[in-house]
Image (tube, rainbow, N blue to C red; front, side, top):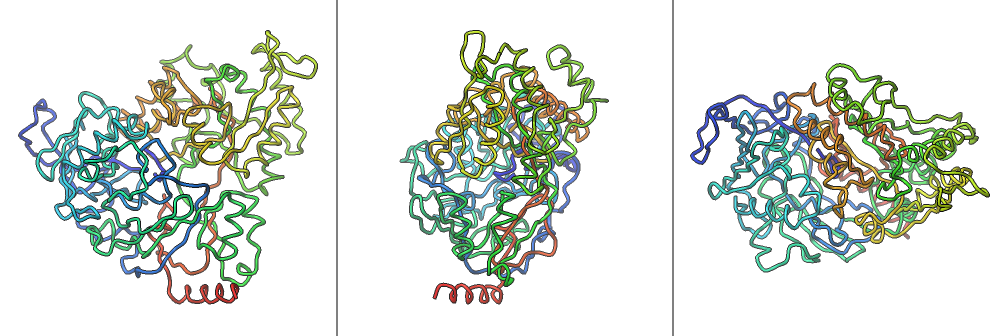
Length: 618
């Protein structure tokens, strides 16, 4: 599943016989489960009549405005297409068929849908919509809207949707408020949940519009917020929908508490931090260890008006790293890619640049039980044995560990190993330059979208220079960066792949051969490996939690030994800094921060903060 975005969950429930007239399934598939929720493995935590999630405060007061920062620019209010740069926060306006809980690995509960039907073999799923569901323009949400949305996203939406819905054969309306999705003979246990994550768009709105064109006209959604105002590239404000159709549902009680949410745009993080300290906005998550350690010692923080707090979580931290574009000839050899790993000195970077804040990432599914560890055994070993000879021998003999230094900045031993690998791959040093047999120099560009990464990339380039490699570092604006990465016009860049506790169909977009040359896909590294394709299919088809873990670990191990990235680092907490005007539920969700939909403004605290800001501005 996807995170981030925000990130996913799935089902197996009590069985209730139900005969649908249109079905032609064999007898073994006639038993159908009808429920309020769906889970990949096991039973959902919350019953059909639950009043609110445990981590939501149903008595949270509504009101006030929260102001947040966004970096870069935007020129579109359509977040579902490849073209343009969409505005921050647009997901607030669009409800999905189902919604996930933040304290279960992968469970979804009815939102637009009031019930879900699935057969035992999960070859299809049907949703019955809530008749009270409405778009912001007052029109009802219908099965026809659901079918149109699916067909349109798959045909004209961003490339991600084609990969995510690849195994869905068709969608059909069985009535005004009932829709069925058919999956054919594909074994894909999470598809019902995948479809449940789909936002539903208004077919009537697009009747005279081209869906794939960017627009600055707000699209009417059915979510708890709608666009109230905006200045292209500068700011966008959402207002809570006063008569939101779903406000009393158990999945929504205690959520969506701010009256208004505004995103102000800043050129870069440095400017944004200074604006925060000046009181221009209210809350930020800090991703820079340096800024976390040094940037927030200022008067308001010392006076207790600003809170700086790490909030632990249990989310998988995924993989971030310097991603190599294997479409480029210089990075096509895994020995070269491994050499790039030896040239990076994490221990020095962590000590000198990050104040020792991070742990090295050594798995694509780090901070979870899905991460490979030790040597393969049991089901994982059996899976990998089937690919012996097609995958690196180290998969069977050596636990993956990133190269280690003493942190002194003297990376000589690892650079010698890097040079040996480069020489094995046909590169030699001549006149201080690394060249191939044709005399062509080893030179490439590290493409960045933020100056914050220059302090990591520049020392890395210096180490590469000691190998005779010319690595230039280039930072470009957000729009240019998106355009270049969408079209794979880069040599190396910083990329991150967030993961959930139930990986599945999104792995095709990350690593699948079919996505290698699809503009806008997340296959940044350009992986095209039939073994990885088969491992992804095995993950998607996992029949139970134990098999999912074993299959994901096998995929992880093969990706790691492919050396597609130079792994970076991770931290197991949200680093937050905010003006002390907020309150939050007593129970924190395990798998989300929940600031936008679970916190609320405390009027008494807000008055103290606002009074201080007024004094500072005078």
